[in-house]
Length: 288
Image (cartoon, rainbow, N blue to C red):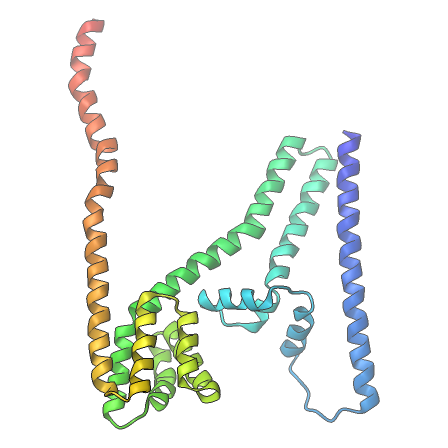
């Protein structure tokens, strides 16, 4: 018992020293930045408190690009959450471990119960958020991919009114906010990148945001149309029709698989009780 208590005490001391070290490190950097600004007498406008807090949190985060991309795919576009994502997971875990260690040292929990609580804390604080964000991101990708025919129809209307593809993307990025926020965000990102790196590169990055076969067809078709100068309106209309047919075929395939999937619950919940009802009278007579 004494050895286990010592292990918890050493573990708590290690966590406390680590938190204190990183806190002092951040404090020193912040103090140095403030001193530098005072020396050069900066005349820049005051930044909001949230921006300052985001800058401070960025020093405590890692895997920034990957985390931000995963959150964006899940529909979370806040820079503050992206910078504080790991802190939002680690801080509750530290509190849970502190409570578990306290209750164990006080004798309210046995070692097995404390170990199970420790594993549950790790699961809830570290693994469950990543699983939720991953599943939400995959769901959003499928949703945006299913809305591509709608986007293509709107782009076709804009092109027929005399707008270019860049202008139509810029216009639709604002109009789609009231209809579909995730689709509007992807279109807005594509429009912003098209102004900087060109439409070809922006379309390639569109596929990075929505990595599906429908998005790949969308990107390749528009790229080929821009490269060889074919009619964009006809291409958009035919592509929207093709993607709708693909979605319909996928839906029919899922419906076809539904019968095989329903056979297992039918056997478990229908056939087994019927067998019991048929065999029960004979068994009762034999026992009687």
